[in-house]
Image 1 (tube, rainbow, N blue to C red):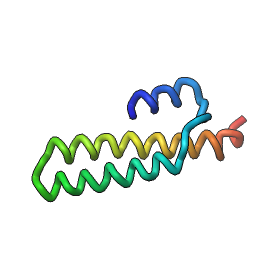
Image 2 (tube, rainbow, N blue to C red):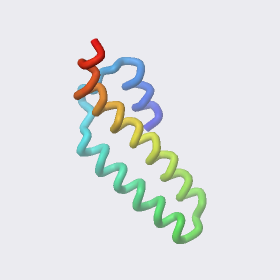
Image 3 (spheres, one colour):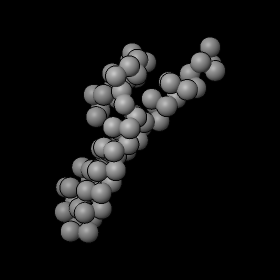
Length: 73
């Protein structure tokens, strides 16, 4: 996901990026982070939590580019 974020950041091209898919992926990450917390599997928790933060950043960046970037031109 970090590479996806970097590609979006450097190109500002959101073609082929699905917000629905990213939202489902974020839901899975949150679910597994909760599982890791409950089972005290800290590698699972932190891996999913950090990945979830990056996925959230991607979602926000895609929304910004698609819907708000034209306001600053």
